[in-house]
Length: 563
Image 1 (cartoon, rainbow, N blue to C red):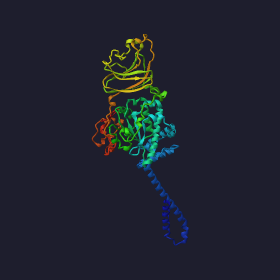
Image 2: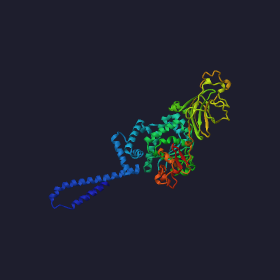
Image 3: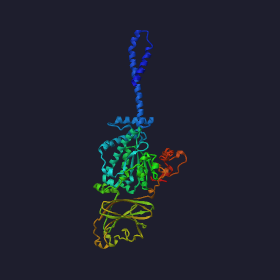
Image 4: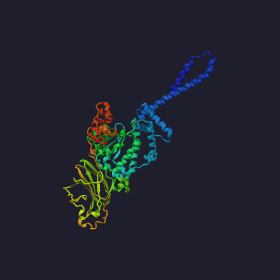
């Protein structure tokens, strides 16, 4: 069709020339070669013009189809970035959609985006990430015990990933595959996500560059805040933000318990502003009514009262200890020895840790492994305050030579630190647990009263006083060994009341923390960032994500409050 149009225009030009014949045959002959040359030039010019028009139209269609709406400036920056990489790098360069993510992450600053792309390409080559989908076979423990899976699409066509975070046996998982194995599984997930994004773009006929998370936090407790897991999570956040920028469209969080405030306080400082805006929380009970604004109602999981039968939450059951790898069986295998302390329990002589609490409502959380023997763990409370070394606690370590048979703990005088305290009168049991060799225990307790809380590990078969040896100058055999870690959390950091009517933004920024504590100015120029970011959603009348900046506050230490 294009050639027919060219010849049509060319013939019209020839006819126009022939309608003005020269009276001189000799002049016509002398100029014939010029006309032939002119005709060739006209033909070539017309063909080039039509080809350029076609190319321009193709590029425009390509941008709209695969990249979305771009301003002339953004389009120019993309061309500039690709040209810069082509001139300085050898080998395959990421496609335009991937380059565009790095540009958006760097606010379309070409130099910054170029640096990020080059760093990411080096990282991918170093870890052989380009071949992970074809070479990596996830361990079977993920198929059997990891409660997460891809689950259709959201209303915008973005791939949807369903994760029941509160059902994960995080400690069992780490003791089975280790930190390296877990990170590799996450990288495989990210590469799967990129492939699903491309498939969704082809399927829905429009540019799709991100995926959506639906995160169910039912069952989340402080045991999920195990320090090796938090450390690995922060590593993953760093890796994903550096190498998979702008791939997460939104994170929809449902059934968030109070402990989520602690988790968010721990990780939010490491999440950039653009990503933090995408975290949305809803703690009401009408999940279907709220979620149907973001995904087809037929795909809402049955455990959220939807019609779609989904077994992903059933996968999150405890991992059998028979699957544990020996080198990962305790905290020592995770490289966190500096954070953990070691306690030795002897027959008749427990190991105690004293924790003074001056703020009622503080939350005590503990995590320990029994690496040898068996014992009983108790948490006691007494109003008596003991002098301790250090800012928060001390460990009771009394030499055997200073003990006498009467100094061992008994049923009515349970504390080694003070034998005069009487159980039920001066000291009270707050928690109790029996632990066997190899057990891993996490727990939490809200300290409702001021005083001293004592964590005690005691031999499970303590002898009667008449059975104690008489020579106390000799060390007794090591009956039990524990490796433990604990933390006392401020009451304010453990307080979260979530919005019950719609999803609310979890946009946490250090630069906005102090401003959020101050009264908002009445003028539009004084809007907070959360208000500005959510103004468009708040105007939506169909019940979609409704940000409510008036119900969300961020304290100076990064705490999030909802009301």
